[in-house]
Amino acid sequence: MFFPIGDDNIQGGYKPILSYTFLGLNVLVFIYQITKSLEQIRFMHSEYGIIPLEISEGEDLFTLLTSMFLHGDLMHLGGNMLFLWIFADNIEAIIGTAFFGLYYILGGLFAAVVHVYIDPMSTIPTIGASGAISAVMGTYLVMFPKSRIKMIFLLMFRRPFFISAILFLGLWFGQQLLSGIGTVGATEESGGVAWWAHIGGFVYGVGAGFLFKKLYGSRYSYTA
Image (cartoon, rainbow, N blue to C red; front, side, top):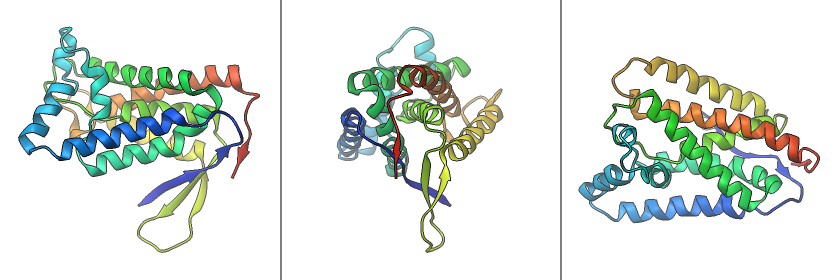
């Protein structure tokens, strides 16, 4: 399995304060979550996760926000936080801390709304930061397409290698899109993954990326 472990960084710019703050909050919530019983964890997920049917009826709209900070297990958390750590700092370095916070939250909300729109009758709670992080990845694709993503191959003890962001993120989005299309018409999301939240977040991120590139395109350069 190929695994990203880093990227080229931006010279100067704003410090990634909120990128790491969001990462820390997700970790802290997960630590709190695992101190609870299985029944309590399930209650947290149903109480603070997105249930599309309830959102469709205008109920529990606060879960569109709270769901972004809950995760199902360590692998779910670890994968999301790795991608947040790799891709968010360059964006915050360019657009600034305050603007990054608004952009990140709106990305998560947009992703959640797309998820609800695709399956409005679902009663399965949806949790995770992946919608907002997908937005970050979409923006990164537009703003830093030539940035190098450092990869390792987990099944072989070999030195890390680099691929371009446009290749890595393009392949990632293609997988999400194919998986999402495969769930259309199904009664529930297959495999427990909210593919359309990923797709929606990424599309939002691409749109934001074009805006940011127009506004801030002259501000940045890469450093390995």
